Amino acid sequence: MAAIEPVRKDINHPNKVKEYSPSLRLWHWANTVVISGSLITVLINSTVLDEGANAGFIKDELQKSGGAVTADQTRSVAASLSDKVWAVHIYFGYFLAALLLFRLILEFFQLADQKLTRKMKTAYRDCFIVKKQLKLARHELVVKLTYTLFYLVLIVMVITGLTLAFRDQLHFSRSLIGNVKNIHGFCMYLVIAFIIVHVAGVFMAERDESPGIVSDMINGGGGRSHKS
Image (cartoon, rainbow, N blue to C red):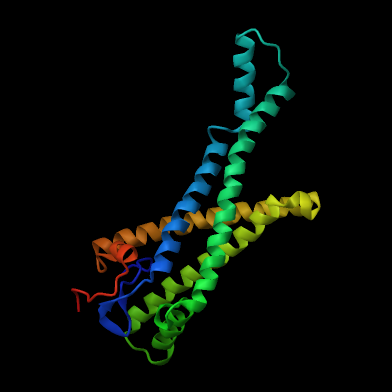
């Protein structure tokens, strides 16, 4: 079993697949849409609306039409176009912050066997104490540690993103804002890496030992597995 494949079965009930509450499923798919939208805005501004490339393009096109513009004017126009997309990016950031808060609150109201903290404790116990289904327990622990790391990265990303969004009100130094921006960008790459690993793991699980795992995240799971 590849280390990145999610586990569909319940460790302590091998014939039963895991259950996902409606709230958790809503969070999962809403988070997918918001993060995808946020990354798309970054992609647009780094390619189609790249300020440097667009400034030159705008200047050339206006000069062909007989217009007289300066480099500063074309850079200002290019920056304005980019800012419109960044404004959308910021709104996605607000939604992401709201979803993260929702997920943290949800952890306290989930059923005991559906809480991430409970699953972590169970996997740790089965792996290092009881040593029950050791291979499955180790795999489950690695997967849950990966999810926990993802949540931590999201927390850092949201905090740094909000700091950048409200930098004028916070009056932080330019150097500090620069560091915050670098951390925010680095977290973005970590999120992209997690998405790639997660999608690859789910794809492998669907083809290998856990077919139906995507369906479970849509309909809630909780049924009996066809594999013993």
